[in-house]
Length: 399
Image (cartoon, rainbow, N blue to C red; front, side):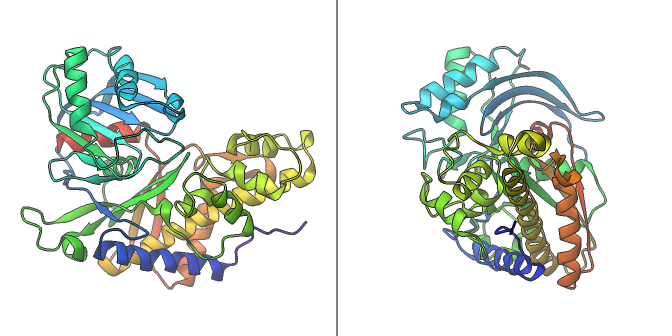
């Protein structure tokens, strides 16, 4: 059986270099394909202390927690809720706050608490730590919220309806930024990358502020800047006709092309595009592909093989994106030798029986090959931390 999803080393390097160039463009001006959104928070590299209330709004879950940061970082309270109802038609901003409030009221909140809010959708950071929603993604489309602050209206609502006593200080940070910040708990690297590969995909890293022309000379801001790439919107070369079909049938045609080739929300759609006449269930998703690869005797051999081809390509595309960002970091910091990638997401840390494969192992092998081919003498270490989103969000508001 042929593999329409195969990518040569040369093609993967094309993708890496295409990302590198588009990141450079995104650092120069706003409104580009890879947005490169600066976050105006300087996380302390050490000495962060205190207690914060933390919220985490993802593609399918909402979590609320109380996080204590200090000698020992610990989560002292946690409540969560499936929030896929966000994706239903007619769901409103007030419905969202009510749903979040139901979860929050299960916790014993610290008095006069600050809030770290891990918000997993594209948002434009503001200098006061809040952020404005750019656009909903991942099948969510709550009207009337785009272009407005995310944090302040929510805090006002929670204080009025729950008498929560939040002190008004809120840091709204992307989930990729929280992964980046949580990675600082592993000191000693020359550079850090936060990576998400789950329902969606994205990357974040630090750049020197003077390496970001679009914020040059910003008053009151200097040093290193955390940058949320919004790299899921990368439109790379070497995608297939199947990817074009998935994009054509999506509700955000022309956007998030990289995400549609990589992430858990879309891999089932790519599979269905290969077999358009087989009457496959529309709900077939990445979890279903994993079941095929983990129970190969129960499925057609063609299905199992195609599922693996899509899974393997996803990992190789992730590796190409990391390699592309390492090329950017190599320009910004010519002396870097060690880079930590803190990776989050169920797809990234998955394993399958077919070919006894682990996603992270495919990523590691491909990065090593691509950096050697690009002549970059640097080592990438991929790590994970339990509850990275919660810890990173607490660090953002306590810094």
